[in-house]
Figure 1 (cartoon, rainbow, N blue to C red):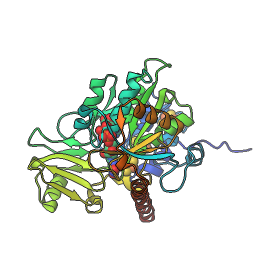
Figure 2 (figure 1 turned 90 degrees about the vertical axis):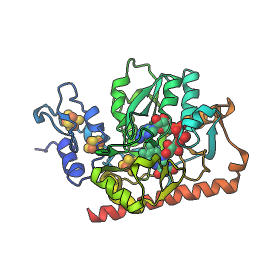
Figure 3 (figure 1 turned 180 degrees about the vertical axis):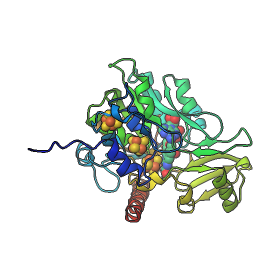
Length: 369
Ligand SMILES: Cc1cc2nc3c(=O)[nH]c(=O)nc-3n(C[C@H](O)[C@H](O)[C@H](O)COP(=O)(O)OP(=O)(O)OC[C@H]3O[C@@H](n4cnc5c(N)ncnc54)[C@H](O)[C@@H]3O)c2cc1C
Ligand code: SF4
Ligand code: SF4
Ligand code: SF4
C-alpha cells in the first residue's frame, strides 16, 4: 500500500521555524489558517504562535507554505517574477519625491510611497491601502487607510519620540501589517494596495500563488527595502544609550537607511553601523535574504538617494504603469540631475551591494544554526 504523503503542517512549522528561533511573529500563519473559524492555532504574547486546539488542525499545510521563513514556493515565485540574482527583476530605477510639500514633511524619505498611493486613491483604482500608523511614541500598528488624510497620517516609517520620556519596556520596529488583510475585506470586488517589508510581500505573493482568499484583492504591492528590524527591552535600551552615548529622552526620530540613523532634538544625528547593533536585531532577520523586496511591483528605500528623495525600483508592468502615471499626472517628480545614468548606476551599485551583504549574512547565520 502506498503511504499517503501529507503536506507539511503547523507541526513542521514548529520544527523548521519556531525551534531554530527564526519565527518573525508576523502572524501570517494564524491569520490565514484554514481552520481559522474553529481555531486551531493562535498568537502568543511571549513568542511564536502556538496550538490553540491541535485536534482542530486540518493538516492542510497552508500555514507552512505562506510562512516567509519557508522556501517551498521559491521556484514558482522566482519564475513568475523573473528573478535575477541580487536584486531581482527591474525595468527602471529612479530617485524621486512627492510633489506635495505636506507629504514630504510627513514622509521618511521623499514621500513617493504616499504620493503614489494618493494617485491610486484619487483615480479610484484602490479602496484603500494597508500601511502602518504611529500609535503613541515608539509604536506603530497595522492600519487600513482609505482617505487622503489617513494616508498622510500614516506616512513615514520612522518613529517619532517627541512626547518626551519614553518607557521602552518592549520595543519592536516590525509591524505585523499582513494580519490586517483578512479584516479589511468587505467585498470580493475590492482592490487594495499593501505596503510591506520583503517578508510581508513574500507572504502575500505566496498567498496569491496558492489563491488563498483574500489575497485576490491585493492589486498593488509596494515593497520597502529592509536590512534589519529591531526588538529590545528596557535593559537593552540602557545598553544602547551607554554604548552610543545618547539618551532616548533626547531622540526625535529613528530612521533606517544606510545605517541606523538616530536624530537628536538638538539637531545632531548619530549614524550607527548595522553590524554594531546586531545584538538588538530580531533573530528572524538573520534568516532573511531579501533586501530590496524582489517580488513587489515597486520597491522603495532611502538607500542611494539624497536626503528628501526616495529610491524606487520599478519591477512589474503594473508597477511601471502606476509609477509613470503618477509622474505624468504630477503626483511625484524626478529631478533630472538625480537621474543621470551615472547617478542611476551608483544607486544600483549600492542596492546590489546591500543585497549581497544581506545574502552573505544569511549564509553565515545558516552555518551557525
Ligand atoms: C522596517 C523598515 C525597514 C527599512 N529598512 C530600510 C533599509 O535598510 N534601507 C533603506 O534604504 N530603506 C529602508 N526602509 C524604507 C525607508 O525607510 C522608507 O520607507 C522608504 O524609502 C520609502 O520612503 P517614502 O518617504 O517614499 O515613504 P512614505 O511616503 O513615508 O511612506 C512609507 C509607507 O510605509 C508604511 N510603513 C511604515 N512602516 C511600515 C512597516 N513596518 N510595515 C509596513 N508598512 C510600513 C507607512 O505607513 C507609509 O505608508 C525601511 C522601512 C521600514 C518600515
Ligand atoms: S489547519 Fe492548516 S493552516 Fe491551520 S494550523 Fe493546521 S495545517 Fe496549518
Ligand atoms: S514567521 Fe510568521 S508565518 Fe512563519 S511561523 Fe512565524 S508567525 Fe507564523
Ligand atoms: S530583515 Fe527580513 S525578516 Fe526582518 S523585517 Fe526585514 S524583511 Fe522581515
